[in-house]
Image 1: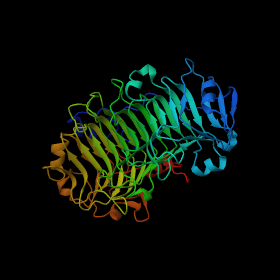
Image 2 (image 1 turned 60 degrees about the vertical axis):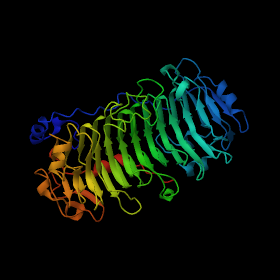
Image 3 (image 1 turned 180 degrees about the horizontal axis):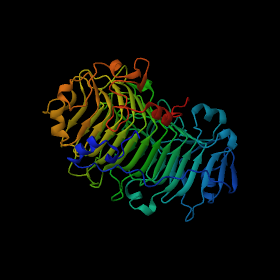
Image 4 (image 1 turned 60 degrees about the horizontal axis):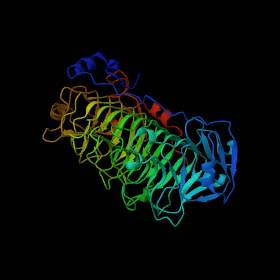
Amino acid sequence: MRRLLALSLLAPLAVSAAQSAGTPAKAELPRATVDTKYPTGGRAVRVRDGANLQAALDAARPGDVLLLAPGATFVGNYRLRNKGSGSGWIVVRTDVSDASLGAPGKRMTPTRAGALQLARILSPNYDPAIGTDAGAHHWRLTGVEISATPEAKQMNMLVRFGDLGDAQRTLDVMPHHLVVDRSFVHASPTLEVRRCIALNSGTTAVIDSWLGDCHSRQGDSQALVSYNGTGPFRIENNHLEAGHEVIMFGGADPSIRDLVPSDIEIRGNHVTRPLAWKGKWQVKNLLETKNVRRMLVEGNVFENNWKDAQDGFAFVIKAENQSGGAPWTTASDVIIRDNLIKGTGSVFNLSGTGSQPTKNVPGARFLITNNLVLSVNTGPFSGDGKAFQVLGGLSDLVVTHNTVINQNANAATVVFDGPPATRLIMHSNVLGAGQYGVHGSDAGVGRGTLAKYAPGGVFERNVMVGADCSVYPSGTACPDRMTNVGFVNALGGDFRANAGALKNRGLDGGDVGADIARVEAATRGAVVAP
C-alpha cells in the first residue's frame, strides 16, 4: 500500500518516532456525496425559440423535462422556483438526442456545444442568467450554454445557486439538489465576470461541463465559489478556468451561523487558465480554501499558475475568518492525492490560521500524498519554487510520497513560519532543495528548523536534491541533481522509481516519491481538447 492514511501503515521505526510526538489524527473523507444519476421518465415540454422561458420554468412540474429548441437563444435573468415538497427533478436541456449529447461522463466542450447547437441562456446585464428562489430544489441544467450578451460589460456571476446576507440566513431557505451537467458556462474574452457559478447551496454538483473565461479586474474571480452553502458538493470531470482562484471555498463570512462548506469531492477536473492571460487578467491560485471541512481532491490536473497578485501557489489551504464575523471558520480534513500538478510558481501553502489567528478554529488533519508536480518556477510559471509552506500552527499534517520537480536555486523548498506545527509527518518525498532546503525564520536549515517548527515530528526517508545531508535527519538522501535521483529517465520525463535512493526505500517500504502509474491512471481523461 503506497499512501499513508494512518500511522498504523508505517514501518516500526516510523511508529516509534511518531509516538513521541503523538499520533496524527487521520483526515476524514467526505461523509456524503451527491447522486448525479440522470432522472428518467416525466413529461416532455418543448420550448420553442422566442418563447417565454420564465413562463415555462414557472409552469414546470416536478418530473418535467423542458426541451429547449436547438439553436434557440433566451435572453433574461431567469429564476428557478421553489416547487414545494417532493423530490421529483425538473430537467432543463437542449432538445437533442441522448446519443448526440453523449452519455453521462462525456464532457461538454466549446466545439461540441457549437456542433450540437446548444440552446443559449444569456444575461443582458450585471445579474445572473440563472438564479434561484429561496428553497428552490431538484433542478438540473443539462446540455445548455449559459453566458451573456455583448451588452453586458460587468457581471457578478453567470449562475447563482443560493444567496448571501438577509436573503439566506437560515438553512430552510437554502436551495438544494441542483446539478449542472454537460453544459458550457462561459463569459467572453473581454467580459468582467467575477464568478461563473456560485454554489451557496446544499447537495449540488457540477459535472461533465466546461467553465471558461471566468475573469475580472473588479475583484477576485472564480469558476466555482462557495461561501454560504453547506454542501455536499460534487465537482467532477470539468474544464475549469478562472483568474484569481479557479476553485474557492470561503472568502466571505457566511450569513448562516456555524456554516462550513463540507463534504466536497473534486475529481477528474482540468483546473487551469490560458497562458495568454498572463499580464492581462490578475492571477492568484488554482485552489484556495478559507472555510472548508472534509474535502477530497483526487485525480485532477492542475496547471498554469504564476506569481502575480500573490506568490503563485497552486494550492492555498487555510482557515480565514474573512471579515471577523465567523469565528467558527476552519480548514479541516483535507485530502489531496493522486493529482498531476504542473506549471506553477510554488505548490502548497498550508496554514492553520489566517490573518486573524485568534478568531477562527485552527486548521487540522491535512493529508497530501502521491502527487506528481512538474515544472515549478520554470519558464512563464514564475515564482519562488517552494514545494511546501507550512504556517500558522497547523496540526496533524501528513505529507508522503510526493514527487516535486522544482527549480528554486535562491529559495527554500519547505518553509515554516509562525507557531509550530503539531504532529507533522513528512516522509518518502522527492524535493528539489534549492539554496535553503527546509528552512524557518531564525532556525537555520534542516534539523534546527524541524526542532523549532515541527517539534517531535517525523521527517524521514526524503530525497532532498542538492541538499547537504549533514544537517538533516539520518535517512535523508541528497543526490546532487535530479538526473542522479534514480528515476527511470528524468530528462525524458519518466519519474518512475528505478534504483538508488528511490526503489523500496520509503519509510513504509514502498518507493520514495509518487506512484506514477497510479497518478496516470487517476488523471487519465482529465484534460480534454476544446
